[in-house]
Length: 447
Image 1 (spheres, helix red, strand yellow):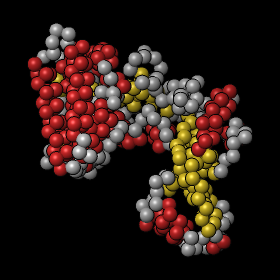
Image 2 (cartoon, rainbow, N blue to C red):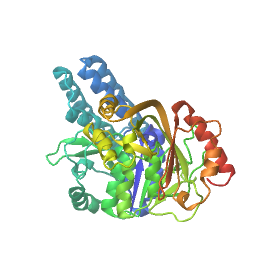
Image 3 (tube, rainbow, N blue to C red):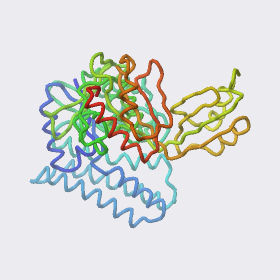
Image 4 (spheres, rainbow, N blue to C red):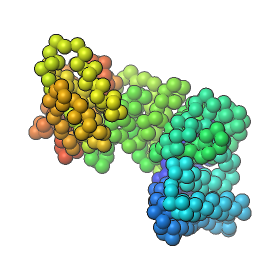
């Protein structure tokens, strides 16, 4: 069997849902589990109305609720021109009533707890999947009955062993030859039945977790691009789909800004050895990317990505010379303030590090200043050059650095066994850096 995950853009309206239904019907011989996000922009609308209710703007919140329900009614009526089934009408009405009751409660208390927010946010997936399942005449399955998480509302952590046992007990028997089961991504529940969410972008994670638990042959991520691209097409319009990349490459690209995959999507598939394919919903026979455990052939560079803004801290002290324990003392300061360090580059008497801009910079700088000189550079960006074969290709540094002529590189980070060369530049120069790198690598046959 396979898992087919469809994002919000693939479920945005009735026409999109028809396309999804066609894709699923063509895959019925593979007994697909269909994992769906909320219809386009619905989750944003749910967060907006919840915040308005908390602020006491209940009239505005209820107007947004009605607009959301009207949107889904319109989709359903378009799909069922002769009239939607009574059970679907009832399901939409019940979800509308549940959402209105939650919003009125938030407005009355003027308090929006993370637990309440998760229940409100879950309505988007529950609406989209009710409509799609009804249109296809397929079984609807409530993911919350098997996606067991802890009680970290807003970013629930799946309890893997319990989740797998529940999937095998309750979901697996429903996946039979020639039929599809439609369920939700993004949402789960605690042991006592409280609704949780896996965090924004968690539908991909849900698909991977379900695929791993079920031993799927393939986990298909259907989206609005023809696979993982060699660069962000908004910055580099001639970016090309990558036919095959490794799990490690995909994880690196996701961590450094690629928008196609949620970083956590990769891990369950890696552990289960299941390939992940990324495909374009509206171009089903077009190009796509396959993400597998290991790619042994290909060009030195697989793709480019960027993330920013980041902040660069450079810590300098002559005490570093021939002194053991200096780095331990340095990183203790970051541990105290729970600051994650991304890149590190060292010299004889200095260490440069990148951190996220929202980190407690002032506090850690104050502590570090007691034994070193600290300089801070803000509004920087990381440009990542990713490729499994990068470390095995001699002479790559020359073409890479030559391609960045006219751009000041403030920091370079790459270990001997790494698949990622990371460069730090001013954020305003990151787009030009990507464009020059991509052009030079394509021309030279390295990408």
